[in-house]
Length: 263
Image (cartoon, rainbow, N blue to C red):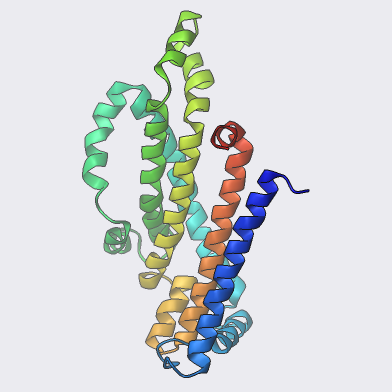
């Protein structure tokens, strides 16, 4: 007999399978019956053919080349955002002087959407790797920073008071109390940042790129090949979903107590 957790997982997977299958059959039906022009919505078989064309080589590279180009940029920008954003956010929450120094600057720059930085990135770094990494960094650093800040600020005051009463130093309080308490919110911010980084990478590649999935989309648009555009969107969706699922699994391993308290 299945446990409650196994039943919940099976139920979620069943709903996901039904929704995906329903979407596919609607897509297949409206295109096969001619209710929608192939120029507006390419049928599934044309998208599969376009994926095969890309895998064999399209616009100077096969599917692996475009995948590698996109992943190298998103991972570089994301890792840089985590290295900068997480320590800075925690320092702003734990040290008032750091908050007073960086808080106003972040408040001013935060509302600027990441794609707005693309023209400046081209001007500063050109159309190579550095410009795209910068745009991805801008998109990912804000969630990392804000959630790290919030995680530290949400640390229960009683826990801090008890640790200080027991004679713990400032560094010990931070390492043994603040960091474990902030970890769930911090990891949520890192997961959101990864999604932002992936979405913004595609926007950056639409403008400044010679390879990658965004590059494929914009070239399909220029050549009026909607099947190529749809075929490039397909791996974007799959990779994004896989990264999100992987991060959720990592969260369960690193902070199992949060799952226990919510079940």
